[in-house]
Image 1: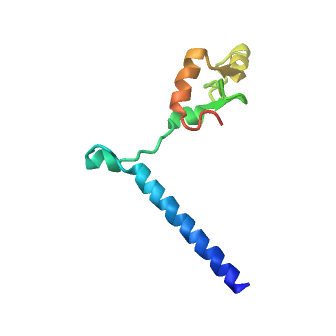
Image 2 (image 1 turned 90 degrees about the vertical axis):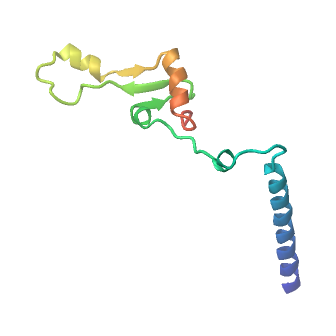
Image 3 (image 1 turned 135 degrees about the vertical axis):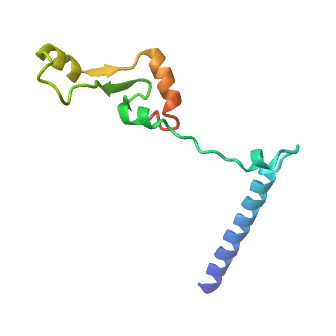
Length: 109
């Protein structure tokens, strides 16, 4: 039992060594690059304002949002206006194209 554990541990270590060697060979460049470009691995960030306002539909190909101006100062607004403000607004195809870029990589979920 103890020898089987040693063999398993040895095979796991050798597997990790081969993976590390393949990773290092895959990241090596055939041409020279500057240090700032080589070391900069940027993280994609979604647009915070769009993230708070828009939600993607189930298919991920369209977006919806609530309309602004419905929560306060309602005494001066007509009932028809308040009903209009309570409905859901959907993105046009042009807006959908922009929102997919703004909400990357989280726009489809």
